[in-house]
Amino acid sequence: MKIIAANSRANYDFLFSEKIDAGIVLLGSEVKSLRINTGSLRGSYIMEKDGALWLSNCFIKKYNNAANKNYIPNRDRKLLIKKKEFNKILGAIKQGGISLVPINLYFSDKGFAKLLFGLGKGKKKYDKRQSIKEKDWNIKKSRILTQN
Image 1 (tube, rainbow, N blue to C red):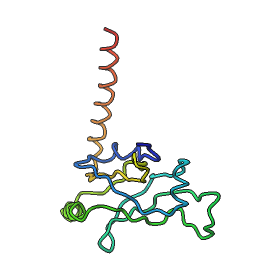
Image 2: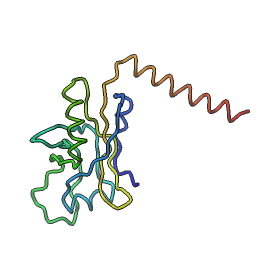
Image 3: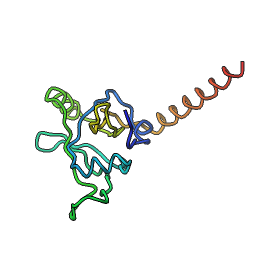
Image 4: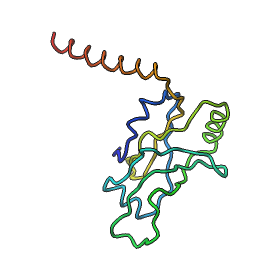
């Protein structure tokens, strides 16, 4: 698994109940561009439109040798998931308070571009402070254990 782009703020801002892998519908030049690590998930989000999930605002730079003159780097890209998973996700979204947050964009072992996204609930300020404290404590604990 080769990670192309990661959303570093995702784990800080959201508490994930479930993480799901999905395929992405890409153009050939976009795949070539991703192979040289020119993608970004910063500010991207997932929405439901026309009975499918779409990745919006995901930046994939134009491939230099591509023939596309009208290429849009932030276009909406369709996500490929099973119908059963889609219905489960749709039910969670309709309950309210749940967001679909892109976490990682990567190439699978078979060479397919995949997106890992999570069903997340936004953290409050005190939850974020608590996660920082836990992270710092784990670092200190590991240092103490390695000294002994």
